[in-house]
Structures are given as C-alpha cells and as structure tokens.
Image 1: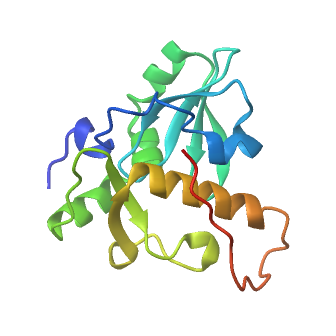
Image 2 (image 1 turned 135 degrees about the vertical axis):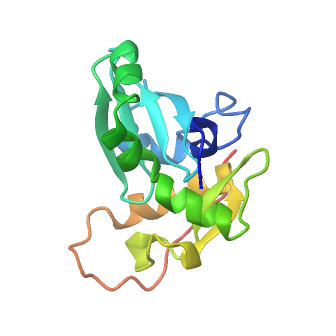
Amino acid sequence: MQLTFEDLLAPVEDLGEGDALQSWRWLADEDAQPLLLTALGDLFLIKSDGKVYFLDSYEGSLKPAGLSYEGWKQELSKEHNIDSWFLPNLIAELKRSGLNLSQGQCYSPKIPPVLGGEVEPKNMEVCSWKVHFHIQGQIHEQVKDLPPGTPINGVNIKWVD
C-alpha cells in the first residue's frame, strides 16, 4: 500500500487548543508546545529554546528530534526517521484491515505496551486523540518509577480538559 505523509498524521485541527500536554507535563516541561501529532498518537513538540522533541506515547519517552524547527524539518526527510517516528508499515496494515481515521482521531492500543500489550494490528483501535494522549500520559506517569517487571494491578485515570 502506498502511503502519503498525510496518512502518517492524525487528522486533528484542535492540537493547539487548551493544554494538549497536560497529562505529560511531568515529562515535557511547562514551556513545551505541540507541533504535530502522528497517526499513532505520538507528538512532536517544541520547547522555548527552539529544540524539537518526539514524545513517544507508547514508550513514555521524550527524545530529541531536531536542534531547531528547521533542523527537525530536515530530519523528517530522512527515511529512517520516518520509519522510526511514524511506523508506516503498521499504518499500512491498519488501513488494509479497514481501520481509518476520522477528524480528531488517532490509532491507540487496546492494551498499552507498558501494561503488556503489543504494538501490532490486533491490539490497535481508532480513538479520540485526546483520550489516547491523556490516558497514555497518566499511565506512564503512574508507572515511571516502578522497576521493570513490576506487576501492575490497576491505574487511576481522570478526565482532563
């Protein structure tokens, strides 16, 4: 399946409304602002120093993506970054299986990887990007200090606006 760059993005128009990073401020600093949401619900953000970062909502990690906005745009032209940041093969599989995104949606794991789920088509569903992003942020914040392999019996999720 041939994908366009647009296929790799979540179709959202409200990314800049409210505080999209509210559930991730523990990781992404107060000065961070959202730039671009991937179809898988990961986020590129920019900090006040001009550096761009990739917030991986599945791993609960924040990694450098460009020393500047212009540098990030150059990084987006590199195939290995597209493969790593956007997982086009997974997106193609999801589309082939009939999962298509509508306005305000992204793909989201039914069982988050941090709770034992796999990043594979049978564990993915279409979800509101806000629900995905806020739930993932809250889960990762609650488990971030646990040693690997710690059994998790539950998480507390609250709705945020």
